[in-house]
Length: 387
Figure 1: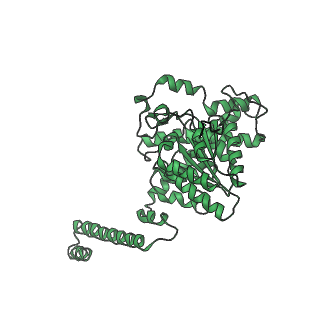
Figure 2 (figure 1 turned 45 degrees about the vertical axis):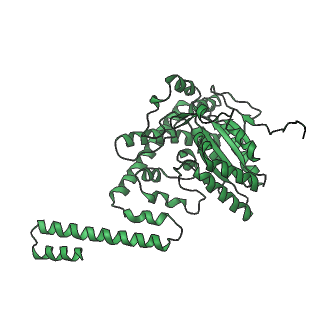
Figure 3 (figure 1 turned 180 degrees about the vertical axis):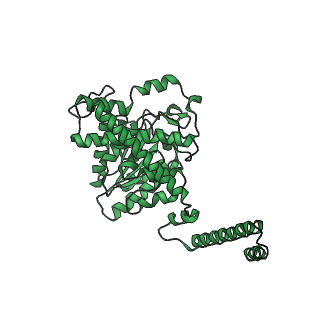
């Protein structure tokens, strides 16, 4: 065989809104002022909710979580393109998408308090719970996309992950499967430059993460992830391709995690102030706000009113979550959120746990009675509990 070359598919890039609030009018999507303000509200809400949750976590009111600060455009921009019939398969840093899909502030805080009851709104909504293991959700998305194709539904499975996930086998297996089977999936990579403390340059030698799509025969696109318009356009096009039987797409959204990886992390140990300042000028919220102000869709008065409404909604959501926690909810309810139909072995575990809890409560009550001097009655209760 003589020497030759293989022509590879090129990778598209897209940017519409720059850091000064200026746009490329030829590429600007047709969105109404109401739609634009709705997108801004969700981006601002996500930012403020994360900031307040950070304060609550430091006060010991909620558990550890991963803030989304700095990635609001990537999340809200892509969520805007999702339809009700599409499936949302998250990792653990997609607050903007969650809010757009209907997650309440109360449920958000309940989840960070450790209550599975926060997941009750998932059923029948096409939303999977968050996946903390890196990249495993990519395989879930491939399975769902295969099911969509078999059922001949006009829908898509959209899976979110970070740059670190592209080094995991699950990502490559899922992308290869979707390419081979020509499945309706969108792989949305939030490339925030850091996989905890591992920088992108130590994650891959590729010129981009989007080009990994070429090896698997799917379309690859790289967008400015801090540009809500570019993200929306790329996601909309990818979803239309998927729903119309044209296969999967890998979107790489270039963004930056402005805050900690999780509340157990300290980014000052591994990245520089100079890098953070560089990305500060590209902040997704400030550039979108500049654009809205330039079009007279937003001013300082309206923004201040919006800030006050958001602060009140966050406060009320937390108070409702705290009321739930103080109502002594059943700790064994977590058994109810594992399967659609609880298998026999899990039912046995739940019943065993219930009987043990009842026994402990009887011993506690008998002990309290003995301390109070109830004598024979207390002895009888202790004997019954021991049995």
